Amino acid sequence: MPKQVDHVSRRRLIAEAVCRLADERGLEGVTLRDVAARAEVSMGAVQRCFRVKEEMLVFALGHISERINERVRARLVRSPAQSAATALGHAVTELALLREEHAAEARVWLAFVAQAAVSPTLSAMLKANYAALQEAFARLIAEAGEGAEIAEGALPLDPQREARTLIALADGLTTQVLIGHLARQEALDVLHAHLAGLWERSGPGPADPATSGIRGTRSRLGP
Image (cartoon, rainbow, N blue to C red; front, side, top):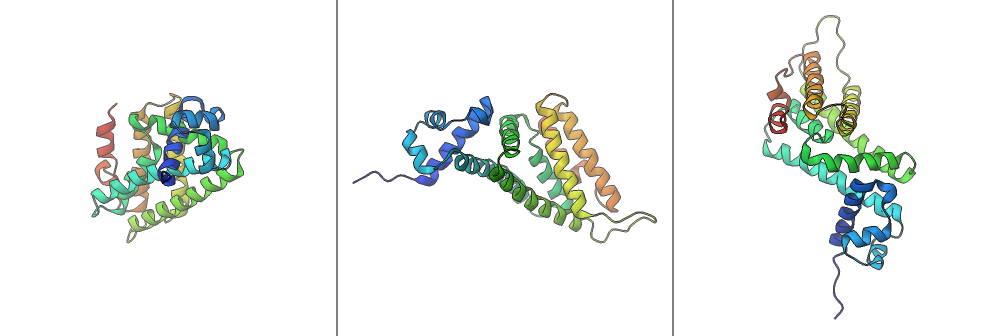
């Protein structure tokens, strides 16, 4: 009887090989032949899973995105009673990939972002991911600001605009840490200061790092 192949597991194995190669040499250095060698499968196996290289890259991008999302969900599940502000702090910290153990993941992510600038398919996927993320952040910001008393002369928060700002800040901090312009702790301080300012402007929101979802992450990162 022919051996049954788990195509889902094989596609994930190939995606991991793509990510390891992208970390080492960027996406321009990723070839089907090299991916097959790194995944320890045949070229034919790779081609049966993915018809062309771009299809393989799209799957690998989805794979790494889901890995990040799983960490965010795991953080939220560990403390289901946390506030919307705390949930947002955890989520944006995970998105920024500031921990030392996520440095390789950050390099791979930025390699995909660079490739998306010249790949309409990858670009469309990233835009869809960012749109979903923006909606999730906007909902948390709106929930955290519910019932807030707006100071005289102040404008209420625009959750969509604040969500866009947070995503852009997280992406920027990822880059600045990778190139060495900021240390990880410095980047985390920037993120914490922005969140603290956001909650101050929202009214009753948490100014303390513990309630913005940042303190626990800071203590694990270290200086």
